[in-house]
Length: 68
Image 1 (cartoon, rainbow, N blue to C red):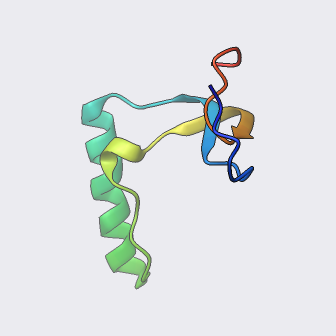
Image 2: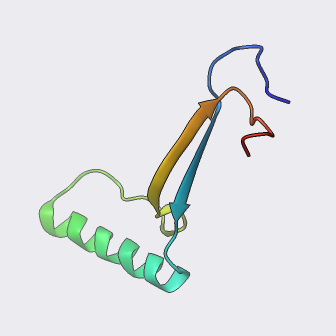
Image 3: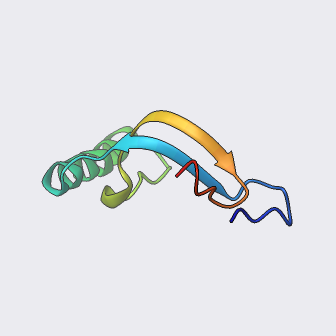
């Protein structure tokens, strides 16, 4: 049942693809190397959060079971 008390979206649904673990670790290492080489200040995302978003389904106040 959606939580509508606040009315503010609390959950985001989207389709995404994730790299396999070995590839994700390689990407994360490369990101850290490039950060140093180019003097970047931001931190790259952790390997387990790397993904490519394919389609945004919607933002909801709670997860509507019918959509999930």
